[in-house]
Image (tube, one colour):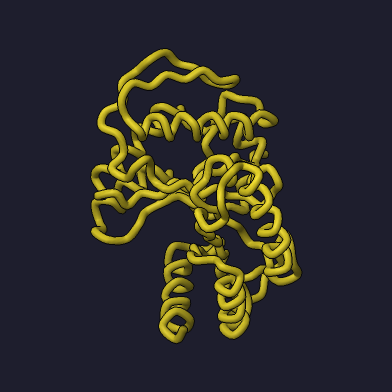
Length: 253
């Protein structure tokens, strides 16, 4: 009864990043998003430091709290209801490990005595952190811990409202909106409109004209990066969709 029959085939993200680090020289490599509570925070941080060193400083940590309780029961040692607090503390640990040197931590969900983290990450003080999610809690996490926001699937009217809240939360945290990047994860489906969680037509689905307009509106709102993937189908279908996106939309932008 484990509810994954609708899922795409998925490879483990950190291992996949290692393959991509060795296969590329210039592109940035990240997750969109890595569910933090599924992994030991110290080991995860050291793995990301290693990738950052080998890649020449090209790693981005896209971080999320998770959403599927059944998956949590299999992979995580914490109560699903505590995933937000766990993620907050794991992000603090990530930053400390990346900084390098002597590190200890005492939190509500995790604690360890002094260890020595060497080397630290090549990117200083740590690789960029994009916080994924659309909830108020996710935006508070962006304001406290993030270098950017990773929005998912929402139409422009929802994004505008969320950006107003993000502006207020960053000010309350003593930070400025200009210090944050905006990224958007778009589930691509060229040729067929799909209903989304926030709208009758999810951005990134439908005709080439509709998708081109979706992207224009995202840029108009201040989003700087768009991460695209095709949801469902074989690897061949996914590659076909991405190729179509590059030749019919990106090349003509």
